[in-house]
Image 1 (tube, rainbow, N blue to C red):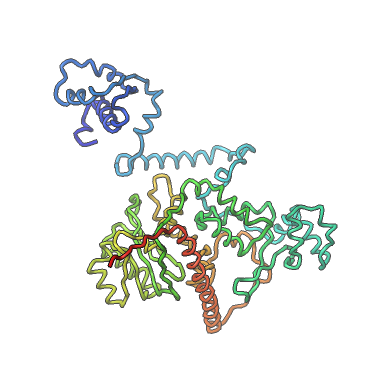
Image 2 (tube, rainbow, N blue to C red):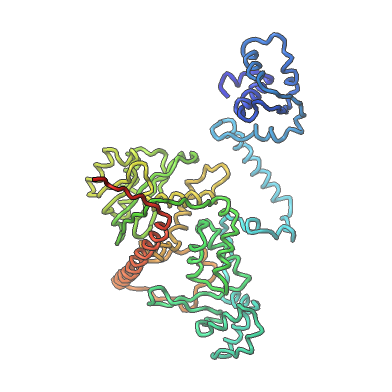
Length: 522
């Protein structure tokens, strides 16, 4: 409402609300009879005003073309509309002050309650429900339980499928006879079939898995049913996991855990996630031929884009500057209050280039920030080959455009209802993205950029295998040599997989292409 409208009497304000609502829904209401319910009884006599003048006459003339009936409803029964009229306004100083007073009152009341009342208990009926009810998807509690080796052994022994295998491993090295296993479940037979790969460490059962490079062997904990939901929650629902798709969640679990049918469990868990289902829509399909640009090493080619405008956050940010490396898929996202060329150039240099070095090539769309003289001059000074997309076709910057959609989906799963805290969640969702295996490379962006995997809360749920405990420190020169060797190996594998992935993407993409042949007349 304008300053003048806020000075209206109550009756005039109620009438203004009716006029504004009818105008807004004109296309639905014109030509049809409809009912107007109000808790202001004086409006029942709206059509009986004698000799209306000025503004009142104009409003009544506006309403005269509609066929309506006004019905009075007491305020205690008018809660649906009253609730909407009391919706908090983030830009209103009065609402902000009222909310602050309410928070103080809640805090004081909470302290009194804690002193004078015993803690509430959870009934059995409250402890059941779907994934969205059992798991608070946005809460990160520092009080999660880290299981000991003794607890893991006890859970494995109590598991109907793992327990018999562990007991056999305790007393014999050779595989049991089929007759002993045949009455068991399919999961028990699956573990029995992998007998030689199962190893017992300090009484706990693990499974050996050869790394993709073939140079090392990882130990996967055999997860009992009692622990599977906790593992799935940490791998998918945790704020540092980012509600990523089943394939990335599967890669995160496969590094440390295994159970019979775990692939199906991960797929069903991700498919049943309410937050993912309500926010992630179908992918857009293209019809043009796919043209690809390869990258063979880190920082050879980077892409940059601006995401927004988003709801103005409490920190005053409305945009996100996204920068991604084509080879490693390492991505940075910087919240911004505006998208001026000076702001973009400063973030690129101070936050990205000063940390990771100067890229050989920088690819952007034709936004005015990237085409400005300031930005072009910066690229010339740093010897950056600046390329750009074709006009009105940002799909040629597809990698970063796709990440924008992923970032929006991940943020939508964790932000508050008013969406004003989105910029505070960006570091968490970036960690989730960087620690997940990328489909194109087969490695996480962190492995290709840093030469190691990122530690996650999922890794601390259970202790590491006993062989990994108490490793000795490595001298710095030897560590550098080993790191160089590791990066060389993973980069070689990533290049091969990127090539195969590109060929696969083009093959399936171009199936739907319908080209037109233009005949040249001579």
